[in-house]
Length: 281
Image (tube, rainbow, N blue to C red):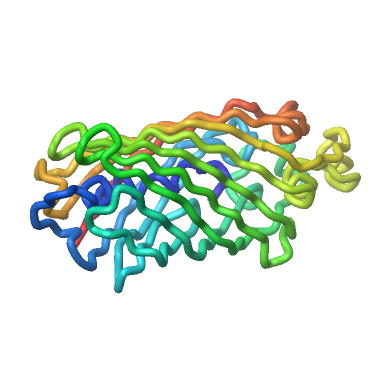
């Protein structure tokens, strides 16, 4: 999976729209009242690596639900658990728990022959914590506004560093059967991450012909995304099949933009498009 899907953590809110109705002050019975599970599958059309201007199609599986009071939420290439249940009529909800993800950035699907000649990078396995706060019933009885952050550390000796990814999302139904989520996100990386993914060391320079580049950490990107989902029987409350479409844009910043992989061989403007289906039971 390319490291080009920063907004997929919001996909659960569209594929799996339970949160929009969970805090209704007088909810009707629904599939989301107790334990439930949603299985989803889709595809994202986006850059082949972080900073690439070549587009590739990537399959995206996902699982979301609530089991024994623990909420399961998908992340790009991974999953997060929320260990803090919200009260049924709560105006504010809080989330906290572990998060894990996998990235194959510059490992697979690299179409650019110059970038490919520099060699593959090692897959990254990251573990950390996720936390946030959600305001329910902001403008009406069914919407929500969420501020959350994931902090992850690399644990398999790939880049050996840390990533921080804050995001804000607003979710609202468009009808009984349709829902939309608008999100804004950012990514901050440390020096270890920047050196590994944005730097060009002497060996990579010799193999690719690109100039050597020493990268430093900092804010690496900001972006926005929009998801629209629709329940196929027109009722989000009873589970079953739902479909979604998504679009996102992010702008690479600082050394994520200045490095040769992006500035010479790629593009700092990163576009993503996606579609998929989920089933809730």
